[in-house]
Amino acid sequence: MHIVVVNRWPRYFDGNRWDNELTRYEEFIDHDANRVSYVVDGPGAEGVLADPAKIACRVRVEDVNDPVELEAAVREIVARAGPVDELIALSEFTLEIAARVREAVGIPGPTVAEVAVYRDKVRMKQLLAEAGVRVPRFAACTGAEQVRAFAASCGYPLILKPVGSAASIGVLKVHTAAELEAALAEVDLNGYEIEEFVAGDIYHIDGFVDDDSHVVFQAVSRYINDCLSFAHGTPLGSVLLGRSPLRTRLEEFSREVVATLRLRRLPFHLEVFVTPGGETVFLEIGGRVGGADVPHLLNKAFGVNLYELWLRALSGGPVAVPTKTVDTSGGWLIMPKSAEHAERVVRVTSMREQVPIVWRELLPAPGEVLPPGVIYDALHHGRFILLHDDEHVVEAGIRKIMENFECEAEAL
Image 1 (cartoon, rainbow, N blue to C red):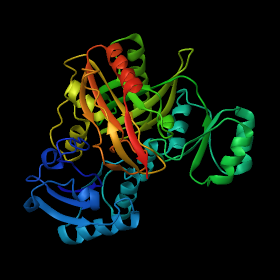
Image 2: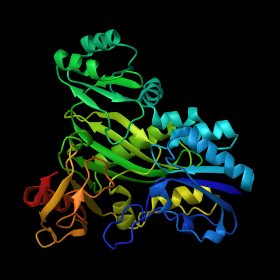
Image 3: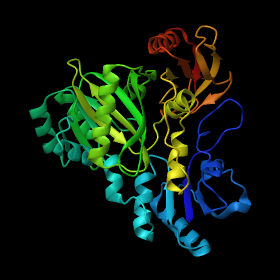
Image 4: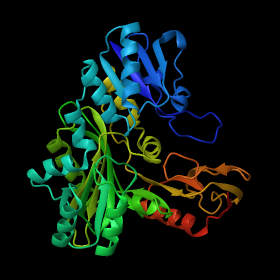
């Protein structure tokens, strides 16, 4: 089999950062039994650690998420190393682009239409609503008058979001008609949807689905704060749920969603609301590994590396069905840096002594400059992973960090 891996993620070796340490292509794809080629950009080149002698072809581009560049790179690999049997892209932002390249070059694998069920937020809700799954009221944005009409019938607040966004990038919450008009003046509605705002707690379910759309592993967590608030400077975290009727209900809901969308041979990151009245409402799903420190927590707590399952499944290797040998908890927390401007760190305090259940702590060094941004896998004011069998102890630890953590930084 000739496998092409598209990589945009670096790997770190400073003994401090742990981002992308679970995406070990050289370990999870058999480079002896297969011909393996890579398309990388600048950061992605730092994440390919396979023996160069075992790489069939490697092409570097400016941006792997540029569809023209990626297609040209894959065609170059075909010309130099032969037809491609599998095109692998693990990043949320590359999934649809890789599908378009597969169709253009004639490579087997998920098509644009198949990827849309976990990339297009309108398409996924259409399919689920048709199957009777509760979703927010929604509509694809076709023009300002149509959006105003939806708002008039649905009421406020409302959510405007790109249909293919992730990490709440580009998402707006509008509370009034005046705010909606301001948003319409700024937003290009092409590629946007509008949907009902659903009040309640937000949960995420992370797992892996086999060739028959059966969930073989899943873990349920409750967000502390939410992703949209994080984009505006609020800390974000989550806590793994222990055994409970609610967890069982959310696990059953995830199985229904995955089966309805016919997801196959991939990880999933499902987000749902639980309203104050106890109703479960679909929010969105991604056909990829959850972001932030979700995969690192699951790997430590349950011994399950979702990236490993995905890469072994795609490359034809043996995939051991994971089993939860323990029923434990844990959590993670990000104390965000500025989204608008760069900062120079003056002083930062460790929380290990105050919160002994902290397993991993990532802090910037005094004098370090933090570029602006809201991506999760970045150096922020502080990132923490906590471990304990009791979810209430974990949540108390997270809240103690939020109350007592200090990072002094000067704007640049």
